[in-house]
Length: 172
Image 1 (cartoon, rainbow, N blue to C red):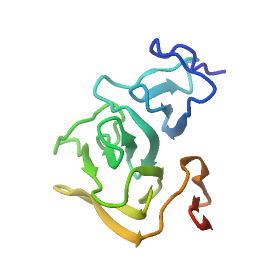
Image 2 (image 1 turned 60 degrees about the horizontal axis):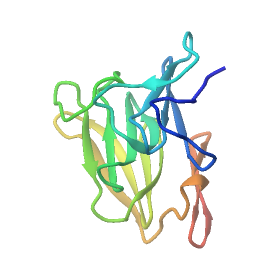
Image 3 (image 1 turned 90 degrees about the horizontal axis):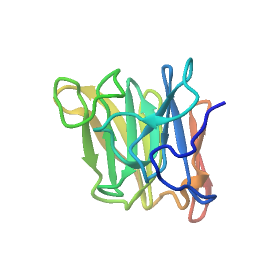
Image 4 (image 1 turned 120 degrees about the vertical axis):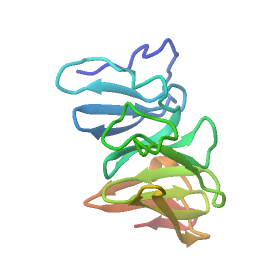
C-alpha cells in the first residue's frame, strides 16, 4: 500500500496527473510539480524525492539502463536521463553518462515510452532515442514529421508497441 499524500508539502488534487515507471526495486513517479519521487517496492510505503539533482518532469520511463524524464520544468521539449544503472545520478556527466537533450522541432513532449530504445511523442513529431554510448550517449532521430501526439493521457505501451492519439485518430 503506497501513499502519495504530502510527498513534499505540495497540495495535490483530482487533476494532478502522475506518471510512473519501475527501475529495479524503485517505483518512480513524475507529476510536473515535484522532483521525481520514488518508493522502494520491497520496503517503503510512501514516496520521497528521488535525488536533489533529479529533474521536475511530467513524464518518466526507462530506456535501456537509464531513467528518462520528459517535459521538464526547464523546457517542455526537453528529455533528461539519469546515469547508467543509477537513478540517483543526474546532470551532464561523461563518467555516469547522464545528460539531457532539447528537441528543437515538434513542440512539447507529450509521451515517452521505453525499452531497448525510447520513443518520444511530441505535439507534431515522433523521435526515436537510441543508445550509442560515449561520448554522445543517445542519438535522436526524427522518425515522423507532421504526426504527433494530441493528448498525453492517450499514450500507452503494450508488448513493445506504443499506442497514442494523434489529431486525426489513433496510431501504433
